Length: 323
Image 1 (cartoon, rainbow, N blue to C red):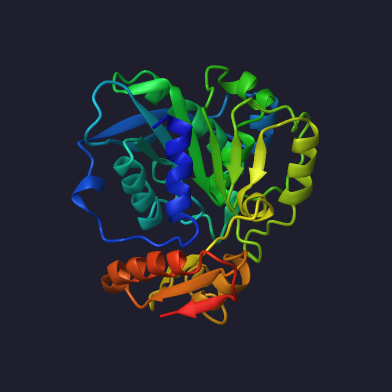
Image 2: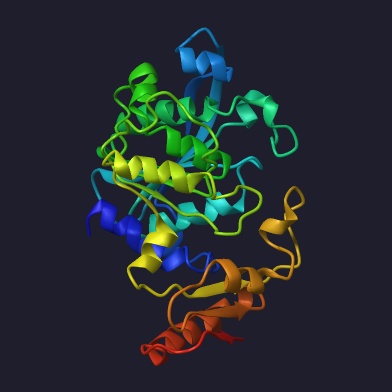
Protein backbone atom coordinates (compact mmCIF):
# COMPACT_ATOMS: atom_id res chain seq x y z
CA UNK A 1 0.00 0.00 0.00
CA UNK A 2 1.47 3.39 -0.98
CA UNK A 3 1.97 6.19 1.55
CA UNK A 4 -0.91 8.47 0.55
CA UNK A 5 -3.39 5.63 0.24
CA UNK A 6 -2.40 4.36 3.68
CA UNK A 7 -3.05 7.80 5.19
CA UNK A 8 -6.54 8.04 3.70
CA UNK A 9 -7.36 4.48 4.78
CA UNK A 10 -6.45 5.39 8.36
CA UNK A 11 -8.70 8.44 8.17
CA UNK A 12 -11.61 6.49 6.70
CA UNK A 13 -11.38 4.14 9.68
CA UNK A 14 -10.74 6.64 12.47
CA UNK A 15 -12.02 10.13 11.65
CA UNK A 16 -15.76 9.49 11.14
CA UNK A 17 -16.08 8.24 14.72
CA UNK A 18 -12.96 9.67 16.39
CA UNK A 19 -13.11 6.55 18.52
CA UNK A 20 -10.05 4.85 19.89
CA UNK A 21 -9.69 1.29 21.10
CA UNK A 22 -7.41 0.12 23.83
CA UNK A 23 -3.81 -0.24 22.55
CA UNK A 24 -2.90 -3.53 20.89
CA UNK A 25 0.51 -5.08 20.34
CA UNK A 26 0.38 -4.05 16.68
CA UNK A 27 0.05 -0.41 17.79
CA UNK A 28 3.30 -0.53 19.73
CA UNK A 29 6.45 0.91 18.19
CA UNK A 30 9.39 -1.32 17.33
CA UNK A 31 11.68 1.47 18.48
CA UNK A 32 11.20 4.84 20.15
CA UNK A 33 13.73 7.65 20.09
CA UNK A 34 13.80 11.07 21.73
CA UNK A 35 15.14 13.58 19.23
CA UNK A 36 16.09 17.23 19.72
CA UNK A 37 14.65 19.84 17.37
CA UNK A 38 16.76 23.00 17.24
CA UNK A 39 14.50 25.94 16.42
CA UNK A 40 13.82 29.59 17.26
CA UNK A 41 11.21 31.42 19.29
CA UNK A 42 9.91 34.24 17.12
CA UNK A 43 7.23 36.87 17.09
CA UNK A 44 4.81 36.69 14.18
CA UNK A 45 6.44 39.81 12.73
CA UNK A 46 9.86 38.18 12.84
CA UNK A 47 8.52 35.08 11.14
CA UNK A 48 6.82 37.05 8.35
CA UNK A 49 9.94 39.13 7.71
CA UNK A 50 12.30 36.17 7.77
CA UNK A 51 14.11 37.65 10.77
CA UNK A 52 16.29 34.84 12.11
CA UNK A 53 17.40 36.72 15.22
CA UNK A 54 14.91 35.00 17.49
CA UNK A 55 15.71 33.21 20.72
CA UNK A 56 17.21 29.75 20.27
CA UNK A 57 14.99 26.94 21.55
CA UNK A 58 15.49 23.19 21.81
CA UNK A 59 12.34 21.10 21.55
CA UNK A 60 11.87 17.39 22.17
CA UNK A 61 10.24 15.03 19.70
CA UNK A 62 9.28 11.38 20.14
CA UNK A 63 10.02 9.29 17.06
CA UNK A 64 8.15 5.98 16.86
CA UNK A 65 9.38 3.44 14.29
CA UNK A 66 6.61 0.95 13.43
CA UNK A 67 6.84 -2.81 13.72
CA UNK A 68 7.25 -4.89 10.61
CA UNK A 69 8.78 -2.74 7.85
CA UNK A 70 12.52 -2.78 7.32
CA UNK A 71 14.59 -0.07 5.71
CA UNK A 72 13.21 3.43 5.24
CA UNK A 73 9.57 4.03 6.14
CA UNK A 74 7.13 6.91 5.58
CA UNK A 75 6.62 9.27 8.51
CA UNK A 76 4.18 11.88 9.81
CA UNK A 77 5.07 14.85 12.00
CA UNK A 78 2.34 15.46 14.62
CA UNK A 79 1.77 19.04 15.84
CA UNK A 80 -0.30 19.39 19.01
CA UNK A 81 -2.92 21.99 19.85
CA UNK A 82 -3.14 24.74 22.46
CA UNK A 83 -3.40 22.22 25.30
CA UNK A 84 0.01 20.75 24.53
CA UNK A 85 0.85 17.08 24.00
CA UNK A 86 -1.82 14.72 25.30
CA UNK A 87 -3.53 11.37 24.72
CA UNK A 88 -5.00 12.52 21.39
CA UNK A 89 -1.57 12.72 19.80
CA UNK A 90 -0.48 9.46 21.42
CA UNK A 91 -3.44 7.58 19.98
CA UNK A 92 -2.87 8.98 16.48
CA UNK A 93 0.77 7.96 16.71
CA UNK A 94 -0.24 4.39 17.57
CA UNK A 95 -2.79 4.20 14.75
CA UNK A 96 -0.29 5.35 12.13
CA UNK A 97 2.30 2.93 13.51
CA UNK A 98 -0.15 0.08 12.99
CA UNK A 99 -0.24 0.99 9.29
CA UNK A 100 3.55 0.90 9.03
CA UNK A 101 4.02 4.68 9.22
CA UNK A 102 6.51 6.26 11.62
CA UNK A 103 5.42 9.25 13.70
CA UNK A 104 7.34 12.19 15.14
CA UNK A 105 5.41 13.90 17.93
CA UNK A 106 6.99 17.29 18.59
CA UNK A 107 6.40 19.23 21.82
CA UNK A 108 6.51 22.92 20.88
CA UNK A 109 5.71 24.10 24.41
CA UNK A 110 7.79 22.43 27.13
CA UNK A 111 11.17 23.49 25.73
CA UNK A 112 9.92 27.07 25.81
CA UNK A 113 8.62 26.87 29.37
CA UNK A 114 4.98 26.79 28.25
CA UNK A 115 2.37 24.37 29.59
CA UNK A 116 -0.62 25.41 27.50
CA UNK A 117 -1.75 28.45 25.51
CA UNK A 118 -5.50 27.84 25.69
CA UNK A 119 -5.95 30.64 28.23
CA UNK A 120 -3.24 32.93 26.77
CA UNK A 121 -2.35 32.48 23.11
CA UNK A 122 0.09 35.41 23.28
CA UNK A 123 2.68 33.18 25.01
CA UNK A 124 3.83 31.97 21.60
CA UNK A 125 3.48 33.54 18.17
CA UNK A 126 0.75 31.93 16.08
CA UNK A 127 3.21 31.21 13.26
CA UNK A 128 6.09 29.87 15.34
CA UNK A 129 5.02 26.23 15.08
CA UNK A 130 5.35 26.46 11.29
CA UNK A 131 9.09 26.86 11.81
CA UNK A 132 9.05 23.98 14.31
CA UNK A 133 7.51 21.80 11.61
CA UNK A 134 10.15 22.81 9.06
CA UNK A 135 12.96 22.06 11.51
CA UNK A 136 11.34 18.73 12.39
CA UNK A 137 11.36 17.82 8.70
CA UNK A 138 15.14 18.08 8.70
CA UNK A 139 15.40 15.80 11.74
CA UNK A 140 13.39 13.11 9.97
CA UNK A 141 14.93 13.58 6.52
CA UNK A 142 18.37 12.92 8.02
CA UNK A 143 17.25 9.77 9.86
CA UNK A 144 18.41 6.46 8.39
CA UNK A 145 15.01 4.80 8.91
CA UNK A 146 12.86 7.53 7.36
CA UNK A 147 12.14 8.03 3.65
CA UNK A 148 12.65 11.79 3.07
CA UNK A 149 10.32 11.68 0.06
CA UNK A 150 7.42 10.42 2.19
CA UNK A 151 7.22 12.78 5.15
CA UNK A 152 3.80 14.27 5.86
CA UNK A 153 2.68 16.75 8.51
CA UNK A 154 -0.51 16.68 10.56
CA UNK A 155 -1.71 19.10 13.23
CA UNK A 156 -4.62 19.67 15.60
CA UNK A 157 -6.30 23.05 16.18
CA UNK A 158 -3.36 25.45 16.76
CA UNK A 159 -1.08 22.79 15.29
CA UNK A 160 -3.57 22.35 12.45
CA UNK A 161 -3.22 26.02 11.57
CA UNK A 162 0.56 25.61 11.49
CA UNK A 163 0.21 22.53 9.30
CA UNK A 164 -2.08 24.35 6.88
CA UNK A 165 0.04 27.46 6.39
CA UNK A 166 3.31 25.53 6.30
CA UNK A 167 2.26 24.60 2.75
CA UNK A 168 2.80 28.21 1.62
CA UNK A 169 5.76 28.43 -0.76
CA UNK A 170 6.68 31.89 0.49
CA UNK A 171 7.16 30.57 4.01
CA UNK A 172 8.99 27.42 2.89
CA UNK A 173 11.37 29.37 0.66
CA UNK A 174 12.02 31.82 3.46
CA UNK A 175 12.66 29.30 6.23
CA UNK A 176 13.40 25.85 4.78
CA UNK A 177 13.09 25.19 1.02
CA UNK A 178 14.02 21.56 1.68
CA UNK A 179 10.79 20.94 3.61
CA UNK A 180 8.79 19.32 0.82
CA UNK A 181 6.07 17.48 2.69
CA UNK A 182 4.25 14.64 0.93
CA UNK A 183 0.89 15.71 2.41
CA UNK A 184 -0.62 18.30 4.74
CA UNK A 185 -3.37 17.14 7.13
CA UNK A 186 -4.81 19.95 9.30
CA UNK A 187 -7.55 18.99 11.75
CA UNK A 188 -9.93 21.80 12.80
CA UNK A 189 -7.41 24.45 11.76
CA UNK A 190 -8.24 28.14 11.98
CA UNK A 191 -8.20 29.87 8.58
CA UNK A 192 -8.78 33.40 9.91
CA UNK A 193 -5.48 34.82 8.63
CA UNK A 194 -4.82 36.18 5.14
CA UNK A 195 -1.25 36.40 3.85
CA UNK A 196 0.50 37.70 0.79
CA UNK A 197 0.70 34.87 -1.77
CA UNK A 198 -1.39 32.57 0.42
CA UNK A 199 -2.71 30.68 -2.62
CA UNK A 200 0.79 29.79 -3.82
CA UNK A 201 1.15 26.44 -2.11
CA UNK A 202 3.25 23.31 -2.38
CA UNK A 203 2.03 20.79 -4.94
CA UNK A 204 1.31 18.13 -2.29
CA UNK A 205 -2.33 17.46 -1.33
CA UNK A 206 -3.99 19.24 1.60
CA UNK A 207 -6.88 17.50 3.37
CA UNK A 208 -8.56 19.39 6.21
CA UNK A 209 -10.94 17.69 8.62
CA UNK A 210 -13.29 19.99 10.53
CA UNK A 211 -16.56 19.76 12.48
CA UNK A 212 -19.31 21.77 10.80
CA UNK A 213 -20.62 23.30 14.04
CA UNK A 214 -17.29 23.69 15.85
CA UNK A 215 -17.68 26.96 17.76
CA UNK A 216 -14.20 26.85 19.30
CA UNK A 217 -12.41 26.92 15.94
CA UNK A 218 -15.00 27.74 13.30
CA UNK A 219 -14.82 26.22 9.84
CA UNK A 220 -16.59 29.28 8.38
CA UNK A 221 -13.39 31.14 7.49
CA UNK A 222 -11.92 28.05 5.83
CA UNK A 223 -14.59 27.67 3.16
CA UNK A 224 -13.83 30.92 1.27
CA UNK A 225 -10.09 30.30 1.64
CA UNK A 226 -10.43 26.81 0.19
CA UNK A 227 -12.54 28.21 -2.64
CA UNK A 228 -9.70 30.62 -3.45
CA UNK A 229 -7.23 27.75 -3.30
CA UNK A 230 -9.27 25.57 -5.64
CA UNK A 231 -9.68 28.49 -8.05
CA UNK A 232 -5.88 28.73 -8.06
CA UNK A 233 -5.66 25.05 -9.03
CA UNK A 234 -4.47 23.71 -5.67
CA UNK A 235 -5.12 20.14 -4.52
CA UNK A 236 -7.11 20.99 -1.38
CA UNK A 237 -10.25 19.57 0.18
CA UNK A 238 -12.40 20.10 3.23
CA UNK A 239 -12.84 16.38 3.70
CA UNK A 240 -16.39 16.15 5.06
CA UNK A 241 -17.98 18.40 2.44
CA UNK A 242 -16.11 16.67 -0.38
CA UNK A 243 -17.05 13.24 0.93
CA UNK A 244 -20.78 13.96 1.21
CA UNK A 245 -20.81 15.65 -2.21
CA UNK A 246 -19.63 12.34 -3.69
CA UNK A 247 -22.54 10.49 -2.12
CA UNK A 248 -20.41 8.74 0.49
CA UNK A 249 -22.16 7.99 3.79
CA UNK A 250 -20.43 9.02 7.03
CA UNK A 251 -21.38 7.06 10.13
CA UNK A 252 -20.19 7.80 13.64
CA UNK A 253 -19.07 5.82 16.66
CA UNK A 254 -18.57 7.78 19.86
CA UNK A 255 -17.14 6.72 23.18
CA UNK A 256 -18.76 8.56 26.07
CA UNK A 257 -16.61 10.04 28.81
CA UNK A 258 -17.50 11.61 32.13
CA UNK A 259 -14.06 13.23 32.34
CA UNK A 260 -14.06 16.34 30.11
CA UNK A 261 -10.75 18.02 29.39
CA UNK A 262 -10.51 20.90 31.90
CA UNK A 263 -9.38 23.60 29.46
CA UNK A 264 -12.12 22.97 26.86
CA UNK A 265 -14.81 20.67 28.18
CA UNK A 266 -17.00 21.11 25.09
CA UNK A 267 -14.54 19.13 22.99
CA UNK A 268 -15.48 15.88 24.76
CA UNK A 269 -18.73 16.88 26.50
CA UNK A 270 -20.52 19.38 24.21
CA UNK A 271 -23.94 20.85 25.10
CA UNK A 272 -26.59 18.19 24.54
CA UNK A 273 -24.02 15.43 24.65
CA UNK A 274 -21.44 13.99 22.29
CA UNK A 275 -24.01 11.70 20.66
CA UNK A 276 -26.21 14.64 19.63
CA UNK A 277 -23.18 16.56 18.39
CA UNK A 278 -22.33 13.69 16.05
CA UNK A 279 -25.94 13.46 14.86
CA UNK A 280 -25.99 17.17 14.01
CA UNK A 281 -22.45 17.77 12.76
CA UNK A 282 -20.55 14.61 11.86
CA UNK A 283 -22.65 11.90 10.25
CA UNK A 284 -24.25 12.47 6.88
CA UNK A 285 -25.66 10.79 3.81
CA UNK A 286 -28.55 8.35 3.28
CA UNK A 287 -29.07 6.08 6.27
CA UNK A 288 -26.23 7.61 8.28
CA UNK A 289 -26.22 6.64 11.95
CA UNK A 290 -24.50 7.27 15.26
CA UNK A 291 -23.51 4.35 17.45
CA UNK A 292 -22.68 4.89 21.12
CA UNK A 293 -20.15 3.02 23.26
CA UNK A 294 -20.64 3.74 26.94
CA UNK A 295 -16.91 3.42 27.66
CA UNK A 296 -13.66 2.01 26.28
CA UNK A 297 -14.47 -1.47 27.59
CA UNK A 298 -17.52 -1.67 25.32
CA UNK A 299 -15.70 -0.39 22.24
CA UNK A 300 -15.05 -3.87 20.84
CA UNK A 301 -18.74 -4.79 20.90
CA UNK A 302 -19.67 -1.38 19.52
CA UNK A 303 -17.42 -1.63 16.49
CA UNK A 304 -18.90 -5.05 15.64
CA UNK A 305 -22.41 -3.54 15.89
CA UNK A 306 -21.29 -0.71 13.62
CA UNK A 307 -20.01 -3.09 10.96
CA UNK A 308 -23.21 -5.17 11.10
CA UNK A 309 -25.36 -2.04 10.85
CA UNK A 310 -23.39 -0.74 7.87
CA UNK A 311 -23.83 -4.02 6.05
CA UNK A 312 -27.56 -4.05 6.85
CA UNK A 313 -28.04 -0.45 5.69
CA UNK A 314 -26.46 -0.74 2.27
CA UNK A 315 -29.69 0.63 0.79
CA UNK A 316 -30.85 4.16 1.63
CA UNK A 317 -32.93 4.54 4.73
CA UNK A 318 -33.65 6.88 7.61
CA UNK A 319 -30.95 7.88 10.04
CA UNK A 320 -30.88 5.60 13.05
CA UNK A 321 -29.26 5.72 16.46
CA UNK A 322 -27.87 2.50 17.88
CA UNK A 323 -26.79 1.61 21.40
